[in-house]
Length: 401
Ligand SMILES: [Zn+2]
Image (tube, rainbow, N blue to C red; front, top):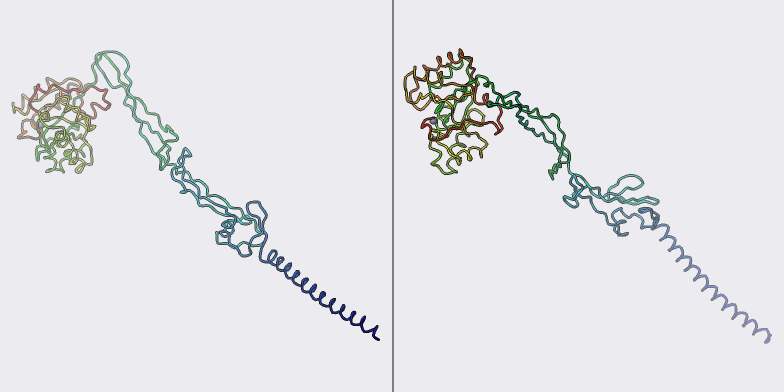
């Protein structure tokens, strides 16, 4: 048995060793399996496959779109605001960046699922809106023929253009003529121009007198031009409205009738603009014609008037009604002196105008009998561009108006 004990002991010992190593192997295998499982779980369960911008990858389960972009360092930028020439007006003021998941736009907080196809997009640029404006095209003036007189052959009609432009930049991209202007045609001729006379009344509105004159003119259907004073118009705004309703033209004779050549530029402007404001308030009209009081004017005054987009004008024929020479004398002066296209100076304000009022029906009747028709200054010079020559007399000629 002695020989048998040792092998047994040996066998037993080997058996012990074998068991131990088997135990270790089992442990190692378990650990390996555990690790492999861990890896598999981590890889296949805690991560999900997605496609981001065409690239396949695995990302943490339950990650949001924003988290995914952050993790993969995908930077998205909003679009810019562009002008009509595609230049940037303001950075990042265009459309916001966005993400499409499986073909559908989703919020950045959306959770990513297995197999999702994620396509990030930068924001699109936005071009400023296009706006349109209508522009009036003034008619050009054509002069044809030769001769001593200038007569209107055709009165021009303004055209209309539509401009397309950037709403913010105001850059015009397209100009479309909707209606071509029809030119004004003036004819030079040796035949005298049509017999037209423009009666003008200064220094009103004057209560009773202006009304009487307006009544007389209305009865004979004679339009006229009234050079009003701002300080008078302020007191009698209803008279201005009456004149306008009757079809007369209201013109500017300054606020307080000063000698404009002795005033500063600022004071001349104030005289005219204050009066214009009063007319605007009473009759919603701007004044265009300006008659410097007393006919006192010079280059400087004329330039100031024109700078205000107004037109200085004096007269061709002074009725001298302001000297109160008697009704007959006034009629004789006007009827005898009238020529085609002349501007006649008379007064409705500035004192007693009984003689003027009495003379008026005779003047109208006699001139009509001679073939004259009556027009306002607008009617006489319905060509407003500066090409028309206007009767502006020397300041020294008369001390009235
Ligand atoms: Zn005057």
